[in-house]
Amino acid sequence: MAESTTDVDQSLLLERMELIRRFETRVGELFADNEIPGFVHLYIGSEAVAVGACSALEESDYITSTHRGHGHALAKGLDPKKMMAELYGRTTGYCNGKGGSMHIADVDAGMLGANGIVAAGTPIGGGAALASQIRGDGDVAVSFLGDGATSNGPYHEALHLAALWDLPQIYVVENNHYGEMTSVHDQHPVSDLVKQADAYDVPGEIVNGQDVEEMYEASQEAVERARDGDGPTVIEAKTYRYKGHYEGDPQWYKENEDLPDWRTADPVETYSEKLIDAGVISEDEYEELGESIEKELDEAVEFAKDSPLPEPDAAYEGLYAEEL
Image (cartoon, rainbow, N blue to C red; front, side, top):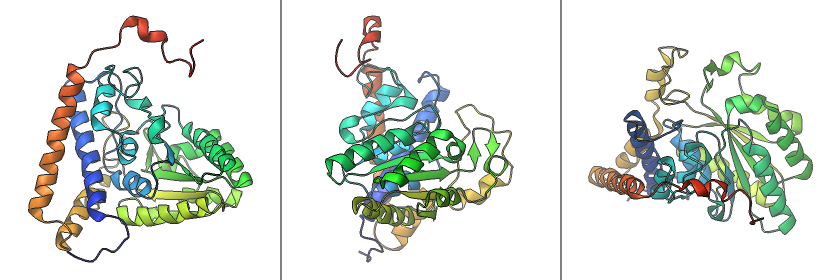
């Protein structure tokens, strides 16, 4: 067994990224076959960001997500079976089949929700961070947001208050180079979005979002800073969105030469090769890992298909925390 370069379980990092990649690939296939209703926004290509950040967290910590939230949910430890059921709109899903792809949440697991509104997760994360600060329990909140969200008001309002009150909140800006159908260079006057943190006197760092260990180490430092009462951090993870804004998007707006360059830095392929070369995992063990995950996904799909749809009368259930 080769010596680890980090204090985190490298095999677990790979396993979580592999699960996200295969889950998302399966979802894309099912959506193309008209098995899954609604819209689907896939996370393929950015697995290292979610896994690196969430691996630095404790179970009691919180995350908020975006419309592209499957990877964040899996990285926080949510059950693929219940997630698949939610995508199928079944009662056994995390939101009883009413949330679908863009609204998966599990408060007990600290997953405060994916969100279809751009930047909306940042003030929600701020609320969780403020509550933790008041309770004094040491929990932190990580808010994932896209590059497009950094030009939206809720992000700046949340960052302003987090800086003012030294909230234990971390903003992970996933700069995947496209906000919907527009290049990041056509949306922002600065090339590095982390520079916006300077206006709030918040420390910021640019991380290679294709490197799960680099992402983990930056997140770990930010978490320690937050737990020590030293306030928020902004991490800009440079990554890439392999897929379109939504499944079915023809991606006419992407430059043809973009994808091959980023494929050479694929986070899952490069990390699996690294761990095999270092002797952390053998080629046979890696193949067995893939087979095990595919079996788990087969079972998740069957569970979803066998689960009932919500009854029409259930439409008004779950609107409030307490029944009126």
